[in-house]
Image (tube, rainbow, N blue to C red; front, side, top):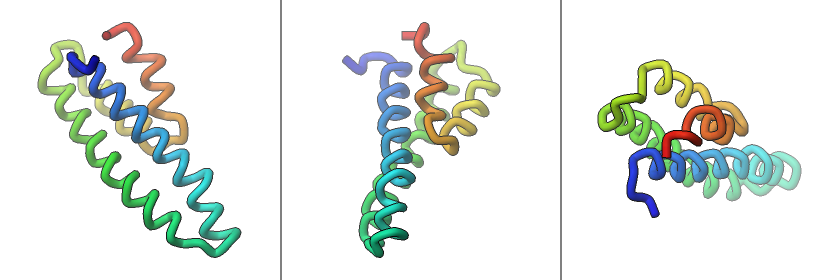
Length: 98
């Protein structure tokens, strides 16, 4: 199932993107609208771990694949800080590289 670096990177990207959307769309409103800061604490910690894993996966892709260029790394980092960014990156860059 996850036998190639691209497939592993795609999975990490999906998980990081989902955690970011959960943080922005559910945990932050719970904190500020309903005074439940624990949601941000939990989801934020999970997202932080996945973000670090995503950055490491970008470095791994740069090292082990012959087609991953610096510009791909830059786009992946930019995508990680934009809502829906990892999903757009996946659709535009990674879909044909499986």
